Image (cartoon, rainbow, N blue to C red):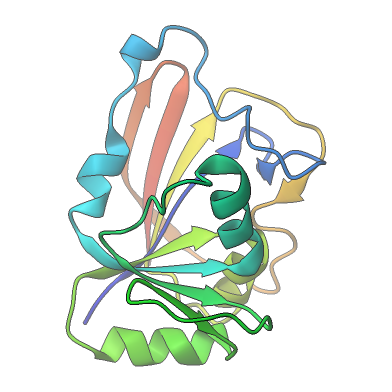
Length: 176
């Protein structure tokens, strides 16, 4: 069965966006030549992306307005908005847990939970995330959009891998 993987970056104090929703702080502590290309390695194992409307909107209006950066994948955008489907982007108005259960039963590679916090928290409540790949950025924001928020029950994890570069720490956990 396909794994569901959260692959995301957060500040040291647990935020995925600042108080204005911005992500321009997603950098290391200095020389970018020290960066490791974890993204390219990660995407070799996925073929499907799940994201919320706010994440989709930020990608197409701010981060990459001229080109869909996830063109090699099928992307499901959870939204109540009426939007036109394309071959690569599918807008769905259904319970994310139900959609994910359907996708997991289909053949394919792993499924990437790209964001945002609301979607992540819904999937965590249903214990549907198999692997947490979190890049901790050396920044304290103090406020903004929290990745985990208040979870309703304990989720036990097992640390599988750590890696550091340019002040960033990658933490990879699986469910126990």
